[in-house]
Length: 286
Image (cartoon, rainbow, N blue to C red; front, side):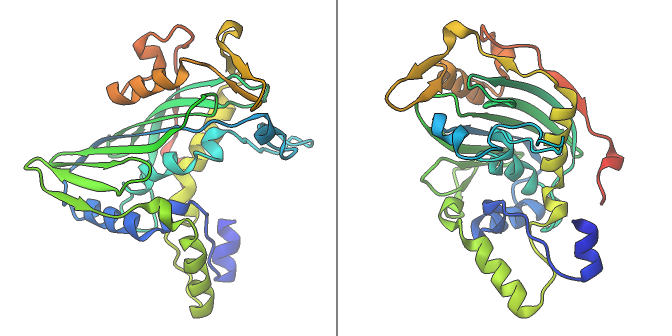
């Protein structure tokens, strides 16, 4: 895709909604200019229940591979909540068109639903600038929380809670608001329309911006061949909504978010030791 883009001189956009929003671009510019000091660590929490219908809506939902062995890798981290893993590395990119590179991952993935991949993901990533990022997401929950985002820097902390503005708060209590990127879902279409009309080739979220997320998903599936299933006695099903969920899971992941820990690090009874993955520098085309 990258080679075709460059050969044809056209633009290519990867539709991570927030990465086309004005609020995220303003925030990213302030991070690049050092307004908050050095970024130290970030985290995101996304608990979005999904029913049996969600996994039956297509023949690729929840699938690892297609009928001919082609990669699909559909999961919570590569579909509905993928935006909030990508966002963490996007705002830390050195330029508007790039994301930070991920060097290492510590990954825990689980499933309650009868799918090939996973409906619950907890991972810690470390970037090439030694920023630690925590990503917590699940569809196997019975109430919705998030997306919630926190990015801690030397002199200020950026926070976002679903339905509110993204804000930076300095140590002296000063606050700067950036608006709510969730209200700009269709802005990516406006950006692409203008690019087509004006024959532009520079897009804020193209291959380079999406590459850290792509490599992370690919390496997770290449490294972890068996997805851990939650213990049977912890899995519940709502006969009315057809939702499969683990009752204490939402509270556990919320506790992980508050403590900046993986489930295995707070002694969740079902948690397994994380898998460590290293992503070589040469994996990146830029």
